Length: 226
Image 1 (tube, rainbow, N blue to C red):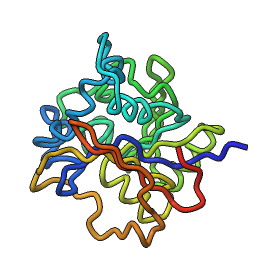
Image 2 (cartoon, helix red, strand yellow):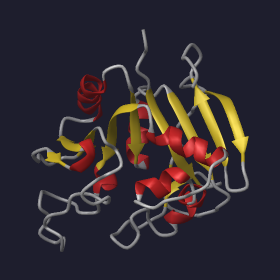
Image 3 (cartoon, rainbow, N blue to C red):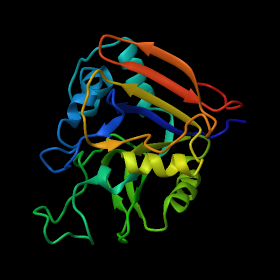
Image 4 (cartoon, rainbow, N blue to C red):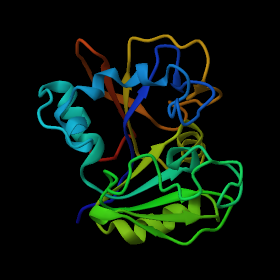
């Protein structure tokens, strides 16, 4: 019987441990300088397909990029990963009152996506099989709904940093697949501040270095790898 795993996959970090830059906005969806963390990803075949382009590189970076988007029956995202507006829906201070996420009408998830928020909103059905569901009951309620949607497939905790930290601190993540980019941000959202990964049971089971980044996988003993 296949066991569903709760995974973080393809999450990019700077050398100094930041998973996003400061001051997220429409112009800087990953925070200031945040795009620098993902340079390894932008040239891959997987990313090109996500944005409707042909081509892209193969190789190790593509292997990890593909793993970061495949094999999942549900995604869990923080509200920042859905968009920069804050407050109730719609945000009267936000110029786009019909905001439907960063990816346009056909997001790359193609599964149910559960958005953590403090404000109720009806599900948003998009093209390509993606439905955004807005969960106000916290991380465990979102995980319960994601399990029901995912079946035997894995569940991806897609970010941002605050969301991954919450699931880590609750002991709910089985595998971390991180990409360390050769970038020093100096400020932003720190992933592991105050978090003891060995105490949570994680150990490094794989690390592969390319010209663009180092891919590191951490799992817990007893969990099937891969």
